[in-house]
Image (cartoon, rainbow, N blue to C red; front, top):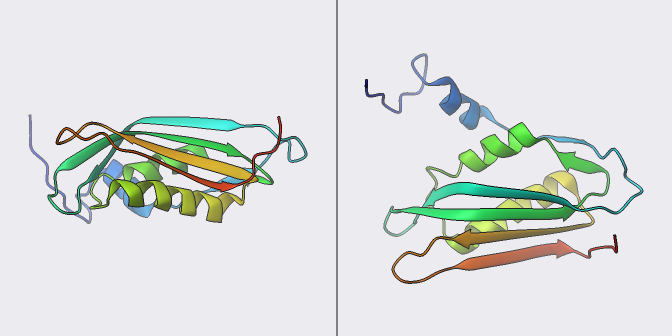
Length: 136
C-alpha cells in the first residue's frame, strides 16, 4: 500500500480538505413548538493528549432539545473529525463541543458527555450541560 503524507495543497486528500474547510451548519427545526430530544452517539472520537501527544479515544454523546435550529449531520461529522489532530484535554473536549453547538443552535437544553477510554488505569467521563430541559 502506498504511503501518503499530510500535504496541504493540490495533493491533499479530499477528506482531509473537507475536514479542514468544514464549518458547522444548522437547519431550521421542523417542529420548533414541540419540545423533543435529539441524541447523537459518536463512538469513534479521537484527539491527542496535550501533554504527551498520545491519542485519546472516547464515546461522545450529545443530547439536546432544539428551539429553532438543528445541526446538519455531515457538518457535525467533519467538525468532530477535526479533533483527531488537536492536542486537547478531556475536560476541554466536552466544554468546547458544548460551547460550539450552543453558539450555533441556541437550544433549549443540551448535554455533552465525553466518556474516554481507560488510559493509565484512569477512566474519565466529563459531562457538561446548558439550559433547562423542558418536559417531553
